[in-house]
Amino acid sequence: MTWHVAEEDLRAYARGELAAPLLWSADTHLAACAECRALLAGVTDPVVLGAGWERLDAELDVPRPGWLESLLTRVGVADHTARLLAATPVLRRSWLAAVVFLLLVTVGAVHTTESPTLFLALAPLLPLVGVALSYGPALDPTYEMTVVAPTHGFRLLMIRTLAVLVAGLGLNGLATLALPGYGLRALAWLLPALALTATGLALTPRLGPVLAPSLVGGAWIAVLLAAQAVQQANTDALAPFTAAGQGVAGAVTALGAGLLFLLRDRFDLFNGSAA
Image: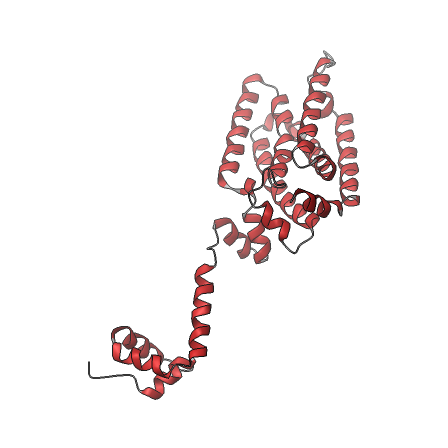
């Protein structure tokens, strides 16, 4: 090798001031020339070299974003919010696949029995379970990180709840499209789903993230069983899916949302006691 990078160019290279095309030539040459690499080490400021290694170490230590985090950042979601959402357990492929499978089975059962009651009973429970799995020390594997995050506990909860609702209600909505013969009646799960989720969240600061949704889900099943027991022979719709039942679900949703707003500061106290 008869050509070497000039010492002046090496100094500029070390300072990050060498411009192309000399920069490209220097890069290629330094990869093959030990003599120039040794000279570069001699002319490089130790402080600058140390800072460069620190930046390299920091870059190597940064976790690579997954597909969901990358997608969220591309659509304009802030980096820290995207990372928080990507760590939400029910936004993982395994949970989403399980929900899709359950909905497909339920829709198939509806076509077999020629009644949407099973689907209408199940669909409101999925968002409730999804929110429960996304918050709390017993079920969330990233709970410790969210506790020490410099963010209001209620805001963290709302971010994840909104994400879970978008995913859960979206999948329920797609399943509803597979029941075109029932018209608007196939959407009777929507208000109960919001009512159950809002009530479960409102009870969480007092009962905890496991007991609260469990009791709400159990109460929903009890209401359905009671409605079936008193169902009139001239109608095939259970009371929660009639106009009056939908009105009650809407009122419960508004009441639960109001209580949740009033109790928003208790989620920080809940975090501290649970941690």
